[in-house]
Each structure stands twice: as C-alpha cells, then as structure tokens.
Image (cartoon, rainbow, N blue to C red; front, side, top):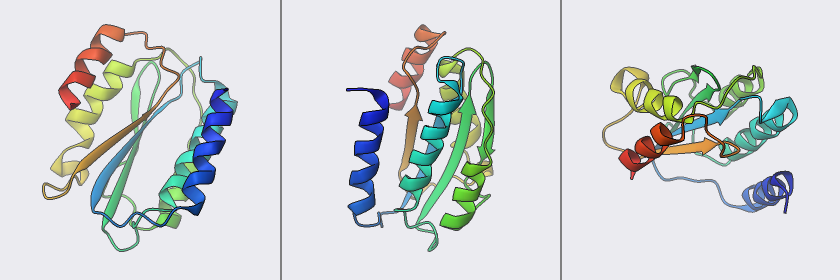
Length: 152
C-alpha cells in the first residue's frame, strides 16, 4: 500500500471521527527534505490541516505548534501563535517546501529545546504530543534514535 493511499485512508477516518476534546499541546514536525518532494509535502500539509480541524483549538483546550525540517529546522508557529482552527489552517497552508537533507535528529532536538518550552507556550498541566511526519530515511539516524528514546 502506498504512502498516499495510507494517508487518504487515515484522513477519511479522521473526517468522520468526533472532535478531540482532551487537553493537549500537540507539536507537528514535518519533513520537507528532498526525498519527500513538493507533492508529498503538500499532502502532509493537507493531512495536518484536516487533522487540526477535528481538534478543540477554538476553546483553548488544545494548542498546536508546527516545525518543518530538512537540512535545518524552522518553527512554522509555536503554541502561542494561533488560537483558532481557521488561523492554524491558514498558517499550515502558507508553508513553503524547501528541500534538503533529512535531519530528523536535529528536528527532534529542536522540538525538545525550543518548542516544548514555556516560552513557546507549552503548558505544564497538559500532555505533550509530538507527531513526526517523515519518509523515515534520516541522514542522522543515530541522533534520531537517541532523541526518540528520550521521548519515550
């Protein structure tokens, strides 16, 4: 089954599911490396946009941050930036594809030190969820493995 087919099946399930109402700070980490390509990056953006439409963002119960990574890592937006589903979706739509190598370990370290912080709007009293969307081929596999172990 192809990546695209799996993604569409998951989106269909999400569209019929009830909105998520549990409090959480959710950080999306999107791979925009050369192996992803612009078409799949647009599919990831669409997937995340559909996913956030089911979250309880407007009430403040759920907060969302987004990071993109390839050779480097950039904050698309942090937990303080947007407080409505529509504004989060607009910010996701505005993301541009850049290409580069897949520095997954660097991205996970960045999330830990720059996004899951009080300064970026992370709340101490709610669970953190980090969702990584990648093709799984990291240029820094050892560092990525170490960072994944830290999150467990």
